[in-house]
Length: 406
Image (cartoon, rainbow, N blue to C red; front, side, top):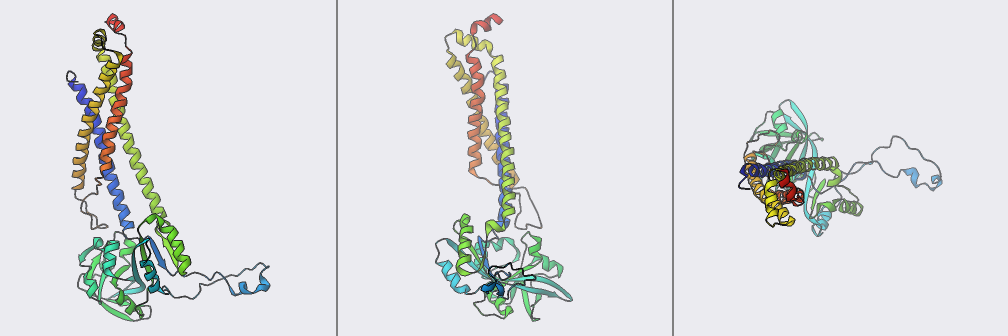
């Protein structure tokens, strides 16, 4: 190895760049996927309880036994009249608080409203929340770029406005905004915060107020709750628990797997592409090592002949080449880990600005240790096999044939 420094260095660099490229690719792609996942998952409950407006399943004719055996065709069925609020919301919340499967419950009041600014009027959704729970469970602070969310706890006349609404109405922090209801009432509120979720349809519609403020705007009492957001200890149990709650309390329950089916598919495809490209990089590095060691055999035929002629067995010759490959792999793997880490660190410190994601200042990178463990393990395994096959060829060489050829 020391006599052939150039070939040794080239072989080690092949491993270094292969492992380094794998770590860089996986760290960056995994960090990007985590960022995209969190934009959705941090803002989405595992189970969403609400009252869905839908047609009555049974029409009056279905209750008449005279028509049980006849074919009934009813057209222009209208949705049944029902309240938007969740019936017996407080007992439901008490039940959920006692459940061992449930991690947290967040009640909300959602109401259609109008944002009034001068002669302009925008449709919107007013969301009444308990701000401490919203911050703790759904990371609202990550999306507020002006103001303090906790001010909403003490200020029943405050509002945290979506940046899209603020821009359209030319409003800023500290300004007053009038909220119009479907009943024609107008409530003045003060802007104590601006948020940007990264989703335009949300930023152009949604705003946050104190839960009691939303109930007062709706003209309702303290038990008026339109939505209950639930987070479980285990997210994969959401579909089963949602069906149980739907049957038990006669409410609509939407689980996170159903509401984000397309998003989950996109995440799976992105991860699949990342792993496919990364594995391809490792395989290319392995073939590079094999080619270099294979060429070394032809360059060292005289050395092999001398070793065998002086009493070295075929197993000894094989072990020389395998040990050489393993040493190259370990050195290259360690250097690859160092290279991958420092380049990932450089990417992590590269400025990244986006108006859609105000809470992200640099490119996302995931420093998961499993990427580094996989890299060094592959370096060891790939170099072992890359040295094993050429060593088999070297071990079978007859020193007499080599010397006669010379």
